[in-house]
Image 1 (cartoon, rainbow, N blue to C red):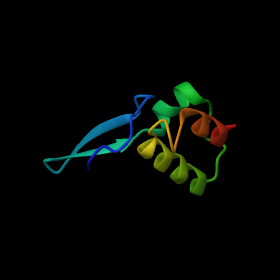
Image 2 (image 1 turned 30 degrees about the vertical axis):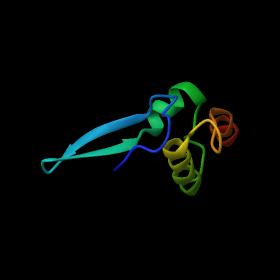
Image 3 (image 1 turned 45 degrees about the vertical axis):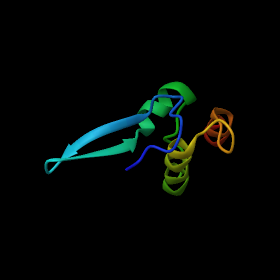
Image 4 (image 1 turned 90 degrees about the vertical axis):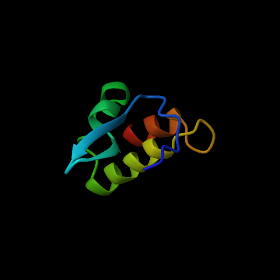
Length: 70
């Protein structure tokens, strides 16, 4: 996967699976800076992960991420 966002919050993580490296955006790391996302429905957590992936400071900002969790 190609990184597309800035990853301002440092949530991009790496996992080794079957000899391959995969990248994902950790909701646990996001919660450390944004607040508790555990109350969000699963569909909103998927949206949050997608916003983390595409956070570029223009179309998706850290403020957008905070608003979703609040």
